[in-house]
Image (cartoon, one colour):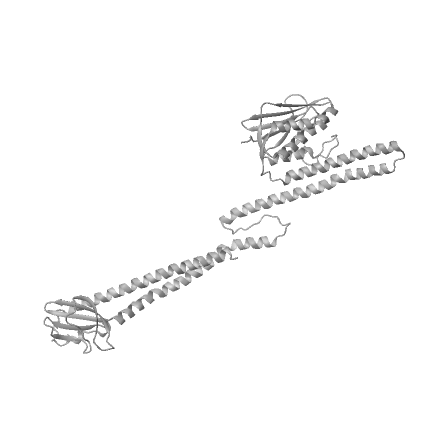
Length: 436
């Protein structure tokens, strides 16, 4: 495929060549016309100068300048020849006044002349000039005009080639810079000499590289953390499996099997959370639908009701009317499951958990409030990080709040942990933009 540089150069060169050809032909025609008009003026002035001349007086030859390339014939009003500058010159007495074209004789080698005939004061003066001479003079004048024009065209072509090449040099530098890089080279691209049009693209490209660098760093950290977090439950499952294999009696074997099932469930929960977090992070969230948040929260509480009953905890939903948002239903359901599940895990048995949904000018607010020990203000932001568990926390992976925070961020919202307005506990609040 032809490069941008090649396309621009050829289009400019062909355009300048075409324009120069039109201007050159116009100049050629205009200069030729001016030369012909000037020669006609010369013929007319010579004729008017000779109309009162005494051709019988000696010294007529002084009136004839060979450098002027003019032929003169003089008649009286009766047609008698008074003067002829050349014996070979034969012109018609009855030629019309003004300019005309005629041959100098009837011979095959007769020269075609441009003749000016003046009838005045009983005289007929004819001044002639060969057409071939006039054409040669016009051609020479045209060439004198075209020579500098052609030199200017050559200089313009060179200027176009050099200018286009230098102007597109930053694009070549960018291509070479990208060619030298590999998948690990995500540092910002610096081209100080790049023009303003390219600086905007460079800024966008560097921002993309920065986001890609951050994403790769996050994924590397995620893989490292996941490998670290999976190592412990896998080791525990292996130990519990060994306990089952080496149990001394049926009672020990049953106890070991109970521990093994619990370890497998915890490992399964960790893997599910890891997959859910990876799905939310990799999702572009571009295909959203209108989601009725109250119904989604109601379904979540119904599914977690059995788990709440085991701990004698009450789940409540506080909302009036319907509240619609533009969202990914699966991601919002994951957010609700993790927020309510986190509250069930950390709140004391016998307490209640309230999910509140309210709408306002700023959007739709979702909050989950429990009556647990709460979180120290200095640790609330860290609790939203993956694999982070507070001291003395219940067993878990430390991914619940991280998944909820990532789901909120993907929807342009922010998960905020704060103390309730009254009483102990923790309130997790998310503000969504209202659906259209």
